[in-house]
Image (cartoon, rainbow, N blue to C red; front, side, top):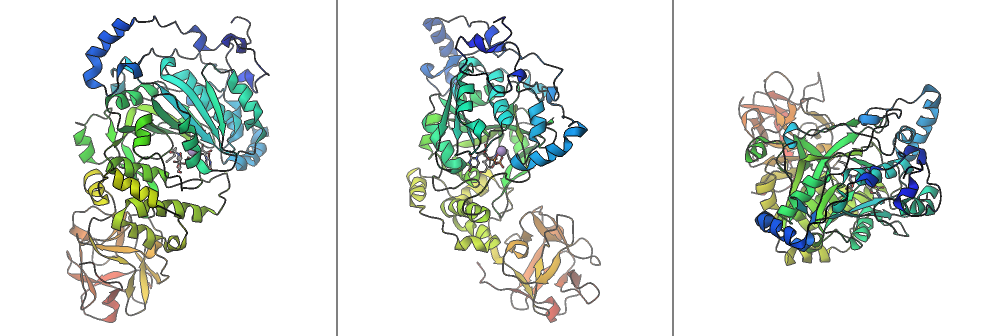
Length: 576
Ligand code: LR7
Ligand code: MN
């Protein structure tokens, strides 16, 4: 291995010079891994005897592992240590142009070593964690459609460089009908020379990420499946804590903290360990602050596994057999979207749990737009996927999704009987159970009287959030019956809510505001009288009124007088 070429070191003939091989170190540290002294069977059995009460796996599925050696840093390269890359001024125009193709700055990515180093971003309390010396192995499944070369390869190298070799069974790449030359035979030749087994599978026709992952999962030989997006960087020590948690309970599905790789500079920015996954009325996955309830359950220890109501979807590990037991994915979903909530609800409702392992970090290039096509249209596709989730898993709360997006009612969602049968067969709990026990902080109210728009009798206009954020004024606009910003729920806790926010009045003179719902009554407590049609603010005793001519879009509080300006129509039947 001193020939300076590096690629001969795997002992295999290189079929062709790999692209961008100048990004590689002269030799790869894998080759200086000290051979693990083979433990005799009886030694392993003795070790297993000590550990087995904490592990959910039989001995034959466990492997002794050692930490991977660090990769030497090449400080001549930009971006080392996860730092931002500055594009030289003469390349800026080209960088801008190329941005469109992937919706990230691929030129910045091309300048960075495929093996770049990252700062250690873990909490100090993670340093003292001890993981089981025997762990299950994993296959890493990466699906992609038209991924850029350097982001895909850096994902692969970061897995190879930072995973204990004994725990990395293989990497499975699933090409979802990409149209780029570099993802053809060139990719196959490149991966044939890698120091871990890599399979390249191809869907042939565009299948979407869900069915592509199902194809990958079929070929998995490791005990655990680990899914990654194709533009990730695994940080030091990312894998052991994930596998350790699965080994303790094979029905736990685990996610790393997903750090942010800037789509512009490729800077690696640590994400907060105080965020978990939720979702909103549109059924978009969203990050929210971890509530005190969950901090208390963890005894205030930020390095302890964090139970999360939902996962982002792209990066997680799951026991292979459990993946099948719990119903894999919904094959009827297309391209992108929805599968993350589907899997989250299913895991929790059908007897598993979902966690973020805060000592495990993987970076991901977050982008503002999708770079690829959605055959069938973006909103149709996402509505279809989300409606399948809502219909199978959300019971009566599916109303929120449909009222929010009335167009989704007209989308053909296909046959969902197999998924409903799955839910029956697994004896899964109700969505109410999920909301009460897993996600009481959700903005889906447990009980509500009314869901729809709120129309004023004087001017026939509707309350409207105007898409404004929390802390801003409530608006009033022509009614459009399209849900969205005009959808409100009047809850049994006397809130009038729109997704994240509640109507809130803290002074009688200023306009009514939208404020993040706090569930404590106070300024967010309203009582609707369905005979007078008045909406009374309990704290002030005043009534919600259509605005006067001075500012025709801002509803305010006025002395209750029963006038049409204070009559509001909640047009559907009450769900008393
Ligand atoms: O048709 C497709 N076929 C594919 O193979 C469309 C996409 N893909 C591949 C794609 O190349 C990529 O590797 O699927 C992967 C995910 O697609 P992205 O990167 O365009 O999606 P994203 O990062 O915006 O998506 C997040 O939500 C998706 C919902 O379907 C998936 O669950 C993604 O895996 C998920 N990504 C993450 O969770 C990383 C963190 C992002 C957040 C929050
Ligand atoms: Mn992604």
